[in-house]
Amino acid sequence: MKNAKVYTNAKWIIICKIIQSVLQLLVGMLSARYLGPSNYGLINYAASITAFAMPIMKMGLDATLVFELVKNTKQEGKVLGTSLGMNVISSLLSIAGVTLFAYVANPDDPQTLIVCFVYSLSVFFAALEMIQYWFQYKLLSKYSSVVMLVSYIVVSAYKIFLLITEKNVVWFALSHSIEYGLIAFCLIFLYFKKSGDRLSFSLNLAKEMFYKSKYYIFASILVVVFQNIDKLLLTELSGTVATGYYSAAITCTTITQFVFIAIVDSFRPEILKQRKEDLKEYESSLISLYSIVIYLSLLQSIAFTVFAKPIIYVMYGADFLPTVKILQVLIWYFTFSVIGTVRNVWILAEDKQKYLWRINLMGAALSAILNLILIPHLDAMGAAIASFITQLFTNFILGFILKPLRANNKLILKSLNPKIFAANITSVVKMLLKKQ
Image 1 (tube, rainbow, N blue to C red):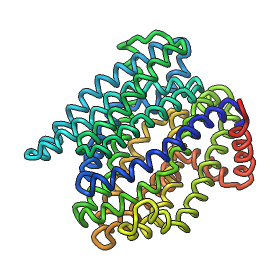
Image 2: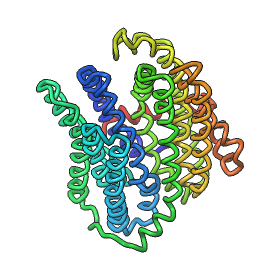
Image 3: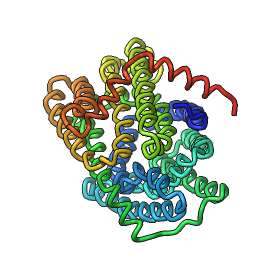
Image 4: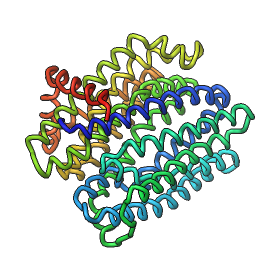
């Protein structure tokens, strides 16, 4: 892509996310060692339950909101206000659902109930945080990125205070909700500061937006299922130690995820505009984006495979060295995961959302079957192999099987030309290093 503003937008996101990721890694490791396996597991249990509530709260609008803003340029306030209203209502219902589930599943454990409720409050603030998509649409992500960075620095300081004062696990669960709250209120303040339109709610528009986004709700829930089914089955079939090794490997694979998300998020608005204005440029941009994320993720996978042992030792210590072989397998699923992220942009641009539930249903089913077969024989390694095969099938092979997706897979194949990557990565580096 030849749009300087897009690259500048990506630069701000990436710089802030790098700092945030480093802080998250350091504070996360210290918190895990302080809390110990039991309480750290409780936090992750609450996170897993809350993860199921997030797609219900978002109602698929996180995937379609930028598109709605592009289409309704003169009704930004109405589009945003309607989206926020829908998300806030669904967030309250989601929090109630998480709390009820925690109570039913753990009737004699008040601490688990409290931790899950406190952690789930983040869903409400995440609903307000949806306003960040207006900043993406306007290519003003430097503001939202700085807000997120400052908020995370504040929360990191809060967590360090908790470590020093030796607070219990409930306070750590609260930190997650505090982070989302700070981001949400700061973004809303900045929205009005940047002369954003007055927010309003339209029932008719809500119905129209829900009709377009509804395909993403079930699809997103299915994504959560096949992202968490491995940990649930691993705990049941092999115990918490195997889950600990596997979770550590997953954390390692997501260290640089923010870079790829930042690139895709920055390019999404321009690609959606090009779909309406210039089909040739639209396809060229998608091919370039695919090329960048595929080759960068493959380079990452090679590096992590070679240096898996020192990475695990530095991050978690000698007790987690069994994670090394798991990471060396698991890291290779990342390429197909980012391919799926770009494919979803194409699906939105082509108005093919109705196929998402089929894609994710087959992915969730395959993940469950593979985990049930492989975990009893290979423990955490079985879960890693299952994850790799699931991502490969769902985000690449399935594109050849389902006829409506074949056009996208042709773009993926074209993007594998190393000359395209070389040309685009040079442009990206120049633009990211260029001063505004």
